[in-house]
Image (cartoon, rainbow, N blue to C red; front, side, top):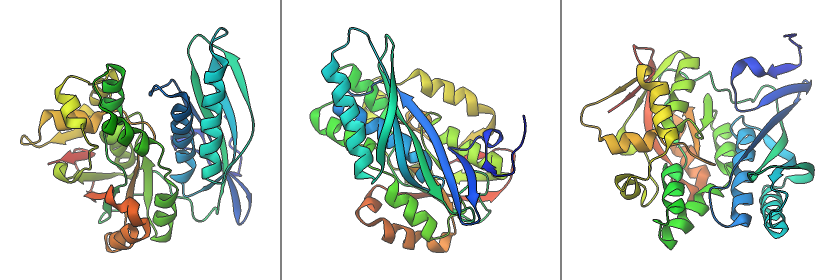
Length: 312
């Protein structure tokens, strides 16, 4: 593979997005993401997919600017569904002040939708996923449980208030959290998506050569998540995430196993896990405003030990 000097973040980094420098004060942030429906309403599905795609730019400290639709749709599918999905994505992008300027649709037996997003960032202000520092505080900006709740919805086990709360969290942009973390000088960040809290925490800690101490009681959890987990609404992804991190994870005996299932739960359009100077945490919450209600300081960064993540 040929290395190009203008590639600041590329394939080798495992980052949330790629970054290409255009000039001393400007770089492009590029990412793509799409997935199958996780809610029944096609318009909400489009909004959620767009939120998830935009997050990969926000977590790098960037500002998304343009988007391209990527859609897969059955040949005999209801065209009104496709219109609703696309409108949801376009409206959500517009809410983020992102221009949707094109896209591509292909025939597929299974519906899939997302965005290819281009953003900008100053080359000296990139938030990386390998630069957490010992002494930092760990902050999580959204509650966990979207995978479990989406599974409960699939089986008709989720009431209307819980459905509303689920859609609300999955359509809340990480824009304000991104702006706040840049303002307070965050050292590193990742967004919590398919690998769950423990998987993404492990990757961030391992690449930074540190250990994360997480306080289980401090982790925010979405309403009804624990009840749905008790009712058996767990995912195959949760089991795979557990296998992925098991050799790198130490869990105190008193931490409930169902709680650990939530920490392994794959998330869609999840929050940001941010490593930031502990003296700037309150300022970060102040900058979040009303969104601070869902954010929590969940732990700290310590010197590298035997495990990358320790939960107590």
